[in-house]
Image (cartoon, rainbow, N blue to C red; front, side):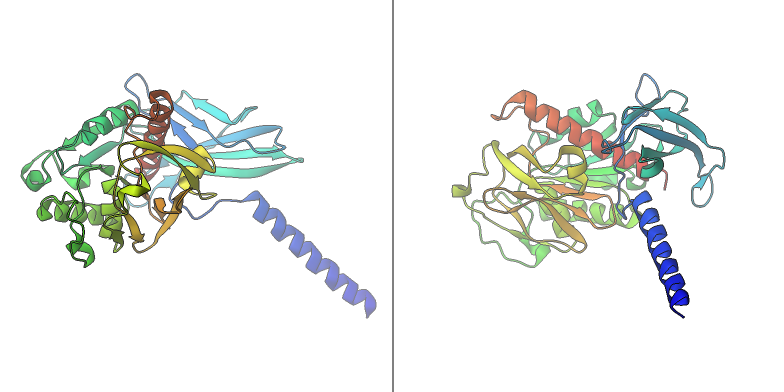
Length: 356
């Protein structure tokens, strides 16, 4: 009888070991992006795909598996044919790609005698089309356009959203991503509040409505959305959130000043920039209550205000600060590099979702 109990105990331990091994070998998370960074896929010069990922501690080398993805009808289908490449460093350059073709890359790390799954990414080797939907007379949209084009996007800017329906070249369904830039204050009527700040620059209510409708349409289609400054606030409102109409000038968020933020571990921005970053602010309102399924991922280090968020399952992101404000007082080099990296990573997200 004791021998039988020991046998059952050994079986349970074996099952626990197998479960732990598999869990450790498959650390993929249910997130709207991959931990693998995609670079330069679909540039004007070529359609090479550059991948990089976070270094795995203790890994002696990495294995990259590439498979073709077909998505002509129905959901994407991954080919059974696998091309494998062994690399020593956490990066990989694939020169054998074709324009508008989709590929799935799976990265493994050789660690302690076994292959551990690092992450997986599926992308389309082409330039994503992004729409900047603006409603203000500020220069934000022009700075943002320069950044997005430098990051590898094909960009369309709508300067007057009231006339967006009249433009034949602006069909929301034809774009791979949406960017809402900075500008004036969002009309508080959209989050069931009254105007309490006489210093706010409220634009046309119709402009807010068109932008909110666009955000909801992209959300319904599961396409990437990035809101910056006022755009961050508007996207939050579009998803049912509220705003603080005036945080007060004493909080020193105006005038393009530099402030440090804290970043949540394992969030989209954490994968790219780590646990903290110094960024440029220029706002007098901020997020009060987050919209449905939005999760705060960045906070002001001094006051704890929400400075960034992302959706639980969809590629929707909000940044209260300005990655596009490289001409601010904070120092051009640092801010420009941070801004360009931010838009490159948004491009990576767009390329992943173009396949779905």
